[in-house]
Length: 293
Image (cartoon, rainbow, N blue to C red; front, side):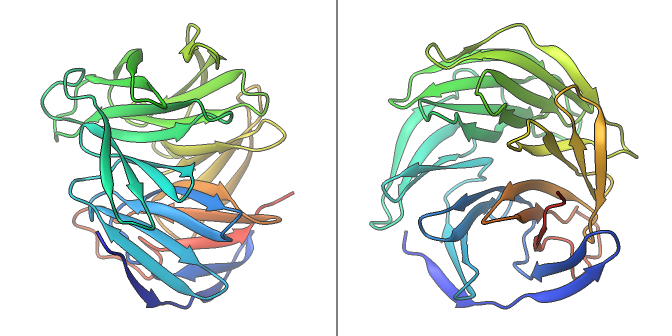
């Protein structure tokens, strides 16, 4: 699957409370899973509904797209010019240089009809890929779960009974796993065992409703704060390690989906456009701003 590339340039928006924000007009339907590649000085992410893997080189202002065969729910850089992707119900690996796609494992036997994979991250030490799933039907039920996939493709379930699994992230020491249910607005935390790829009993960490910003994708910073994209309220919610909201960052898009830390104090944010919306110049865009201290 050869990629396609084009030139792209951002506009700059002076947004109240954040200072200048770069708005990159990437036109995503459901931008998700941003991850900064320090070696390449580039950002990778996905567009779920458009079935795309994307890469932005901000210095060269070059946007590259790889078209994928199915809806894609998650992405993780895997080293050696490889990317692992969670498609409808399987994990695949894409060789970015060769364009070759190979199946790592299938989760079809674990998932009921109507579900798809959604949100996932590689553990900080890199031994496991933790992936959530969701009911993709309009009348959503608690049929989603949380899974752990080894480097070789072995699968075991971590948790069940989720509607829309999301918000996967780890504490700086790697000992705590966070995840959320975007439908219910709840974030949980659990002890994480990297050696075994298992977690302890989940306990509630935070509840974020419609007006506050239901929890979509998330990151944890070096201080242990949980940065949750408030997909229903156009904000980022920054929660302390105790689950208390320390800050709320208003954004120019209506539905941010996840943030990623880049170089220095750069903060990248993906966003989506809901069906039926008349998109603005900022919905579905990729944003770059300076993270508050």
